[in-house]
Image 1 (tube, helix red, strand yellow):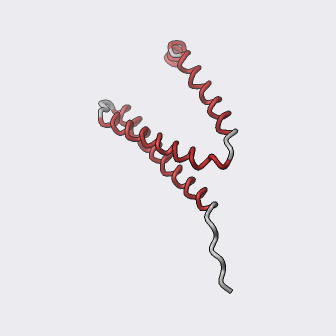
Image 2: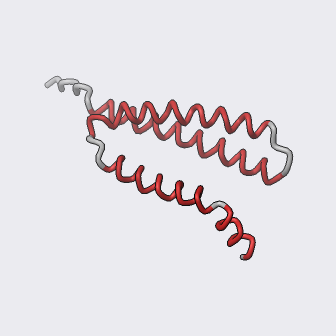
Image 3: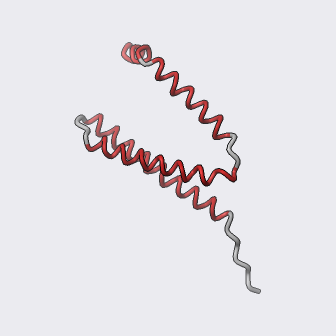
Length: 104
């Protein structure tokens, strides 16, 4: 417990910035109109692709077991996010396609 408190004390500014950015991100995303969702999702997929590449590079330089586990987790979650983003984008684009007419 003492180590956690020391970590928080030493990194208080960084923790504050992370918490503030979470609230800012929620506020910005909640005000995005549905029309802009697909382009923003495509941009997010590109950013997450870069994150996956970076996490693979970091994973390749990992020396301890903890670093390997965290690196694998970063690669897995980043890949999951990219795939989920493409699935959501594909479903959104399907909503704008014309439906085929039924033949009677």
